[in-house]
Length: 421
Image 1 (cartoon, one colour):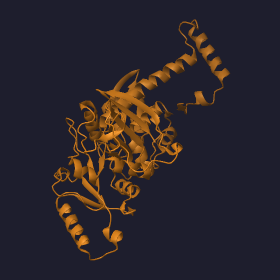
Image 2 (cartoon, helix red, strand yellow):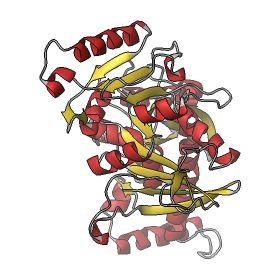
Image 3 (cartoon, rainbow, N blue to C red):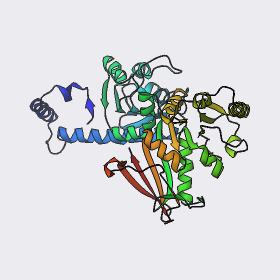
Image 4 (spheres, one colour):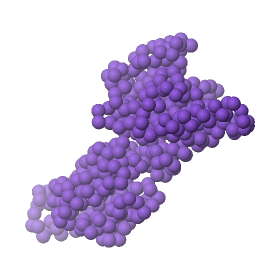
């Protein structure tokens, strides 16, 4: 429920509020059922208005998808006299925050107005932009309504407390779940210093991602593939295993009009990737190969294999590829350690688009936060076809992965199932 700091909602007993309204009605010399509405009705109307305005801030904030990382997506509107007089949203990290943009556009009209934001305003220094709380106070805003408290430990409620100390009224928790969903990647990143991980699978109705011969283009239709490219535009990175690169030779780019390419992360423990692979042709410096230290794997200092691998690593670096050496587990890249390294690079979200092996490893390592399964109304069949999740099955059904908050929507002739782990 929304939290008020307004004294009339926290400290005045119910019976006193009724007396106050009776006095107001008498003073107005009005019939109570005509010109003086019930206080509970007014509160409900105010709450509805708050939701309307906050919904607009969430919609505004969403315009920054794929552009604000590692910052959150934030929208702000200034309301006065029941009208929106200014609005703004954060467009890119390092540029003015949504609150500053909205207040600048409102100018002197901001005095006495209400500011709506989908995230608590920042109050900390040491970043590229000044804190927003000071600008809000200086603008003369009388009330601030936010969806959610900023999960950043440097803020975490301090922003609202600073505003309250300056005499402003505040309200938080309006459409909080919607706001959290919009910034789910930021919440994971800022609290855990690791990216929010989405496991994306495109499969047949019987859970297969390819025939026995390896044919997989295309199981799902055009609408589903368009949606995937839209996600690539919105997320920081996509991740595949070297097996996918060798078998399918994907470009791992974004083909949405006006979109931008995400980071391309290839998990390749032994540097098996072909030098002529399409994914290596990008010249934007956003291709990363995650590998392990072969010295620690083979315990051999001067082997021909190590020299060959070092030479290949140098060639890849010359091609503009970043080689990320991470800890190994059972002779392979430890995905948990990889996520920690990606967090250090300020990558806040990763979508795994690999095959059955990397899918199984991701689930087993516990790095997956969300699952997107695109299901085509096709049955491939056969015990020799390739399942969407490889590896070994659990001995007991109680150990199976269960999705929470499952949702389904239709995309052309396919279906998208979305859930959280």
